[in-house]
Image (cartoon, rainbow, N blue to C red; front, side):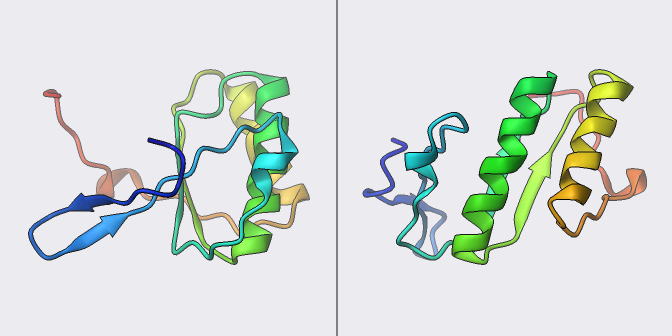
Length: 109
């Protein structure tokens, strides 16, 4: 639900996931009193203004929670992809790339 208050139960082993929405253009959503185990973002790099704001928000939240970030991006243009990488480097993020041979290939949804 995005509120962060109600966990989503996953699997039969009793695990749960707490989800919190992050509005990159609203710094009040950067505040996190909880400590996260992992920050996940997918398909978030698609134009220059959004990409720059996303990196700023990601840095703010990850510094507060000390959580690693898993970001999945689709290559839209080489320029935007390189802007994203450059902004991450400028923010002093440690960046790793998952090798292509470890990507899951599937034609079904």
